[in-house]
Each structure stands twice: as C-alpha cells, then as structure tokens.
Image 1 (tube, rainbow, N blue to C red):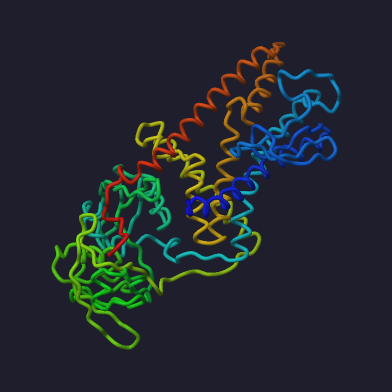
Image 2: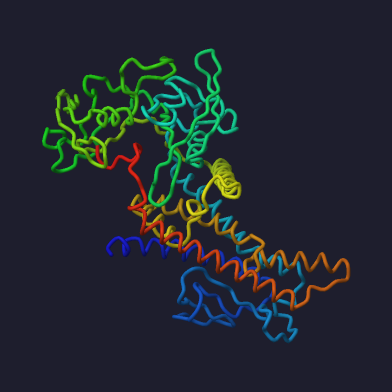
Length: 479
C-alpha cells in the first residue's frame, strides 16, 4: 500500500500534465478561430469538481485516463443551429488545425523537455558517443557464445553501420531473444558473427542483454556499493565503499584500455560482470576479495550462499571514476540534441512495432498501458525530478503520435475524416452523417478493445511477474 501511495502522486502529476497540455492545444486553437468551448475536462465520466468561466466549464472528472475538450456543435448527435461559433460551421482547414493542435502540443512538449534539461545540466557517460571498442565480454553471455573478444571493434550491428556505443546498446535492448548479425574488426581482420541476444526482465519489461561491456575510462574502479546485513560478505568484514582490486587473486582492471589488448584476457577482470561471474562460479568454495580501504589493503574471505540458484556473498557492486561528460548546452545545440533524441525514440519504437507485426516480438511484452506507466513513473520518481521530466517527455511524444493514428474518436480519426470528406468533395460525393456515425462506432469499439487489452496485459504482467520470471545471469540483486 505504501508503494502505491508513493507512486500515485508522481503518476497523477505526469498524466495530468500530459492531458492538460494536449487538451490545451485543442482549446487555444478553437478559441483562436472563435469556436465556443463548452467543456474542458481532465478525465472522463462524472464531473467531480471544477468551475465555470465564460462559456467554458473547467472540470475534473471521475475516470483519470484522458480528457477532452467539448466544442459547440462538435458531436454528430448534437443539434446544430448553424451559429458561427459552432465547430461544424468553420471551414475544414480550421477544423483540421483544431484536431492537430492537441498532438502538436504533446510533440512540442517532448521537444522542449530534453532541450530545457540539457540547457540546465547535460550529463552522460563518455563512452556512449564513442566508437564501440569492446572492453569486456561477460562469460556465459550471448557475446561470449558468439566469440566476441575484448578489443574487438563493432563495425555494424543488426544492419546499422558505424554505430556508437549507444547505438549498440539500443540494438541489443530492442531485440531480446533474436539473432542479430554483428560485423567486427579484430586487429587488421574483419569478422562476421551471429549473436543470439539474451533476455532480462526489468520491472515488467523484457529487454535484450548480450554481455558486451564498454570501456568506462582510465580511472574507473569497482567498489562494494552496499553490503547486505547477515550475509557472508558482512560477516567476513567487507564494508561499503571498499574498492575491490582482486577477486581470488585475479586483478580487477576496469581502467586498462581495451585498444591495447586484442585477443583473450590473461586472467584479469575487466568488468563488473566479470567480478560477479567469478563469485558465482565459485560453487560454494571460499571467495577472497582483496580490497583497498583508504590506504590499507585488506583480504576479505567469504563462503558464498546459494540464492536463486547462484552463489552469492551479499554485496552490491558499483563503479566509481567512470568518464562522465558534464556540461550545459546552448539553445541551438540543445534543440538539435532534443530533435535527435526524439528521432531516436521514434526509430526505436518503429523498429519494435515492426517486430510485433512481423511476429518476432509479442505484443504482450511490448505494449504498456496505464498500470505499467504507473509503475514506470514511480520508479523514475525514486531517482529524482530529472528522470520524471524525462519520462514526461517520452510519454508526451508517445501520446502525440498515438493520437495521430487514423482511428475515429482519436484526433487522427477526425483528421482522416476531414481528408476523406475533402477528397470525396472533389467528385461531388458527400460523406454522410450515417457513414460518419458508423465510422465513430467502429473507432470506439477499436479503442475500447485496445484499452481492455493493455489494461489486462498490464495487470497480468504486474501480478504474475514473480511466478513467470526466471533468474538470469544479468539479474544481480545480491552478490
């Protein structure tokens, strides 16, 4: 119950803001063209509270899964007087502008949020924009099975040439359970490998995992981020913030440049995943961690326990000293960055939906509705205000694009009917009221079926996640 209440307010604020922004787009353009707006509602159904100013009733309604602006003479079953302030009295181009204004406001918001955030504070791991030189390959992961090695340079992945590390991470994330082609350069030799991407469950979503590790920078070090009370690591004397410099005598060398070491490693551990794998593969034998505590070097020996079928000693692993780019962008650079980020989201979304229609990905694992959004916004709120605003921008973009779909009762459906009416008018054919009513009925049924599917899908994923999910090597709640 506490978690529900904790997530509720961020959800209400984010969803409410998206609804108000969307409906304000319709509202302000309608008022600009002299259309009378009778109702501005956040939510559907029974009116809970609000106030009336001028001709408009501003209200909050019972069902908080959207909102609407009710314009005079807008509904098909509404008696029309032909008054100049009625929606249907306006020319088609003005009605088109009103319909497109809501999605346009959402898209503009999606562009504004990253731009403003990057003008205040712009921070990201330096490796993301760099050429993807593999710093480590986690043992037992898909990249290891495909034969990829430390020092390999990824030239292309899943058809995308000259990628950055971010492109590689995106390609892996959206292809869980699929085979992808990877082109590599190993020294002076070019290689082609096929990699079957693994799957890891994060929250309620399935994402891809390959075990490819980027180079975090020359000053990167592994630490014990946290130590679990009552577990062997604590009993052996491990402390939070201890720097781990060896595991069972193997040196931990995250800061060694992979460009200087082609081919198999000589026993050194080059990633957090290597550290975890060494512990998990101990099969119950004692594990010795050599740690740096201040200026003192200490050996900590603990015997792992089995947890989820894996050997763990009970500490969380973290990285410090990673190369981070921290700056502020000027307005032109911030706008360019925002356009690129939103374009990237659209490309990823298009790729994922193409997989759904091609039968390569389950719609159940892809589509998230209000329950899933509730959980995601709650997780973002735990990390601070910036992730919440980033999530708001992402949701705003998706809401804007979704409302442009040519489904009657959505804005895209109205745009489609206006376009169809104009096209038929060229041939002297009317789009009759009866046909419009049938289109609206079909659209309503489609929308209700879609909403029913996503809500049922969200609930089933949320309530049955624990029984359906299997521990994977990428899931490390305790080490």
